[in-house]
Image 1 (tube, rainbow, N blue to C red):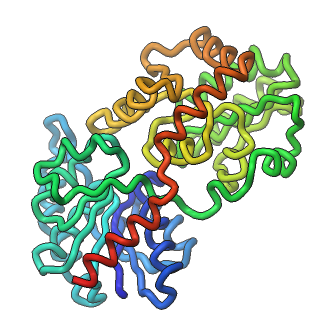
Image 2 (image 1 turned 45 degrees about the vertical axis):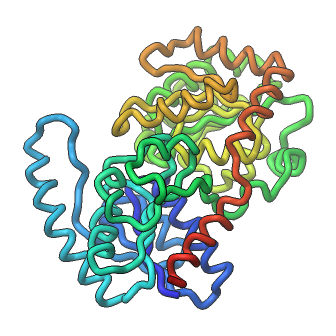
Length: 369
């Protein structure tokens, strides 16, 4: 089987693609799998690190407001199709699979025109612009949330499969993970991150909490991953505040052992990316979710609202966030293990442990046709 994966820009689009690719490789070891992305996206690090070949197309996102950049974006939507066609003709895939974002648009569009089977996986509660535009061309649309189907015109194409997760998540239990990290049974571990690039407001509010509250309580362990964009600035702020001397506090740029740290955590503070939510659900984590207001179609708020409405997470709106409301949310969970357990039991309803296998089955159905 020859598979062309496409999707990129951020880890939220790349990691699902890698999870699907790795699942195909696990089931069909001699499968040939290559990726399509852009030269600027995080796929240049994550995809190549996994050992897959990465092709590039030149495309950019469309601004929702009137902007001169949309003229260039429109031109690239045309020229990127020629680039994608060249890649497809050379690689000759049996199927093309996209995981969202504008990056996936040209390869899926061209593949559909050429009669090659196509699948798109949508992680978010509502389909992104690329999949909305492509839905008439695609053979199958796989979704993470059941309710996503109502936003697709031809619902016969939709299959609810959950989110594909990469290996490691669920592979280490709570106690083993805590022992590995040196966290004691009477300590409460708070893990905070804002994605691979980082989230300014999460970094700010966590630094305030660490400086004004957590440093005075050695039984509360706080780890903050700032993301690539903010590490230099916040590591200086962290040092200037004298927080390096407190053994219960730490700051890092990126979490490379996320499955271990998430498993060990009692409380997680994070954005509402679909992949993150799926990981939280699989690992039954109590969380404080601060959806990003800086994403297309406000989809992180919609993701978080689904959890909040199900009493599966605490949601804080960034525009309303201050030190008091954040401290109150964390204190509620730190001081009340029963409340943490309630959230963890409710969020697990959003986990689909068979997602990888279900997606592989859909790939097989289309390629056999």
